[in-house]
Image (cartoon, rainbow, N blue to C red; front, top):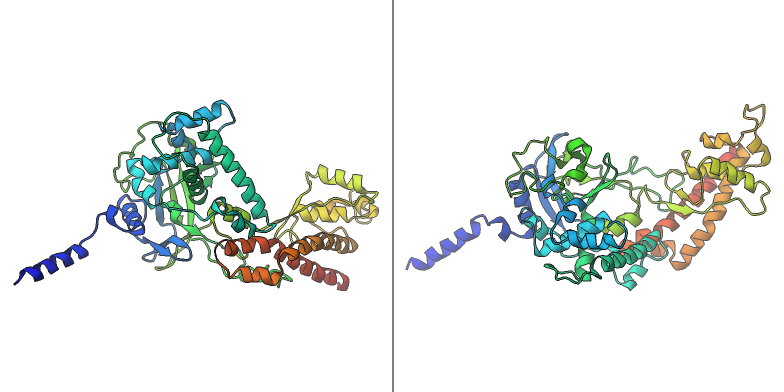
Length: 480
């Protein structure tokens, strides 16, 4: 009579008992592994959100300066590690024998392709936890790509898609020997997307260097802009930055002689045998994330991915921001053909190492940007370029522009009108594809339309905003 109750209790006990890490759901499994290996602070936990995906959240209050994440060199994926891999290195060498050096992104993608089927034991939990798919334009259909309209993101996406197919053909097309892993185009696209989405580009003594750092790759982007919440002067057409969250982590690199390229140059690197990394001293080579400020329990720990435009964010990380201080519009500016001073103005700009196109961004008209210098020079009259004895700049009146100062009140009015004439056609071109209201409506849509809207609308919004800003500035100059 007691047997059914006993079986029930045994079943209940099995449900309450802790599961091995490899039997847990993916997020819980990678969290357990990261804590066990000392990669993730015990004060942090992983959270899976339907909006932002997996992220890192503080489980307790964390002081500034605390170590948050530590990815030891033997666990990181680099191009050097890919080249040392017995199943990948020969592929890369064969491609380089008849062509240029293989890009780091390509080498690391080839490594991930093989790691799925032949995972290094120390990386197996991380490999299993990688997303099964990445929502990047590289994987989009043509109709989805059309949602980007005439934006820089679409041009970048199309160029990257061509480059990706060409690199896949170069690496795998001429290889006739059997592979011990799946070498399909779909696996290649997934692996390249993983490298773009999860890796970091770091600066080092020997130049930039790309690394895939397990666990560090789980932090989401902090879309923080200084002065967020305050509208840019004259901005009512999409230039407001809105709310943003400051980053709570910064990246630090520990490498011999600040040269992480040598991380995987020696076989049998210390710690690569599956041992716990929790006891390794911080002086050993690793990529670490450290708290930049106090973090409250329950707060997501965010990392600034760097000054990237929406075109870059969308193509490499699969998201775009409604507003970003790093969005820029490329403007072709040259003196009119009928301007008798055109050759002189071109020589002045070239002497100052300024050439078209120029970047129009959030702060381009409030600093000594290349764009503002060029506008002032291009709008200058002969007398303004020459200067005068009265102002102490005879023979070099244009120098004021390079010093970040107005040349004259009239010059300020002329360059603002010149900019307005250049922006109006661009705005009309984009409005012909979709109006500002339609762009705003797209922001509430989903999938490719939702992601593409900020890109398609960004240039038009910035054009509208700067046209209005220019009108207010011209009024201010006239009434001064």
